[in-house]
Amino acid sequence: MDPKFIIAKRVAKELRDGQLVNLGIGIPTLVVDYIPKNVRVLFQSENGIIGMSPLPEEGLEHPDLTNAGANYVGAIPGAACFDSALSFGIIRGGHLDLTVLGGLQVDEEGHLANWMVPGKMIPGMGGAMDLVTGAKRVIVAMTHTSKGDPKIVKRCTLPLTSIRRVDLIVTEMAVIEPTDEGLVLKEISPEVRLEEVVKSTEASLIIPKDLKVMEV
Image 1 (cartoon, rainbow, N blue to C red):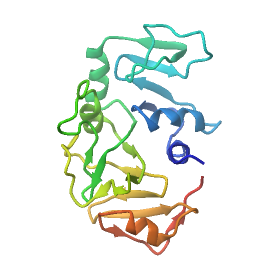
Image 2 (tube, helix red, strand yellow; image 1 turned 90 degrees about the horizontal axis):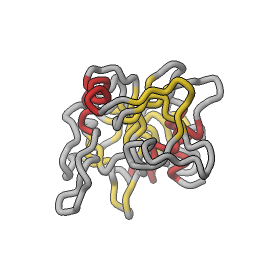
Image 3 (tube, rainbow, N blue to C red; image 1 turned 180 degrees about the horizontal axis):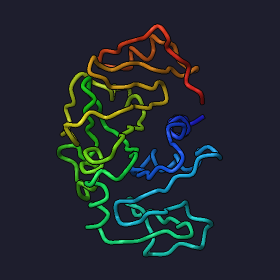
Image 4 (cartoon, helix red, strand yellow; image 1 turned 90 degrees about the vertical axis):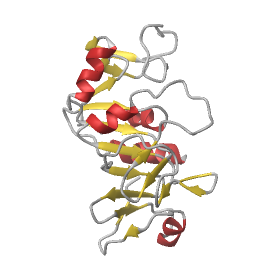
């Protein structure tokens, strides 16, 4: 299975019935395809939608109904649209139960860098800083490495998104929880060995005796 889908499928297991959830651009958008049948959540997009859904079918695209990544989306019955001021009031006010974001780097202290690469053009900083700071829970969904280089590092070399520690990191290789003591390796993919995870991670990992196997 493609690593992106492995990550999205594992993240979906973290969703709880009744939550208000924000999905970032990239891998996080795939999470909607793996939500457990007994779980119903409302999806929010920072450009001003609550009740967002995947596009029902090709041909139903509407230029005024897109997500934060400018991709066409659908809307469930009863969905609400509003301006950015209200949308960011919801985010900054702490009303989001969960946000799932992509990542460029996460360091040993659980700090996320995901909004820019110095020297490269970016369309804008978007809502990542507000989401990481304001959401009740933050999950980072990203590949474990980029072109062979670890993305879970001792210290971020890219600009931080927030000084807040994220709550969980999900990659195709592992599930890692940042804590006061450091990065705790909670689960490991059945497709890799522990040695491979450690070798692919620059940051130090705390490996518990009850290390579990990821359900993918």
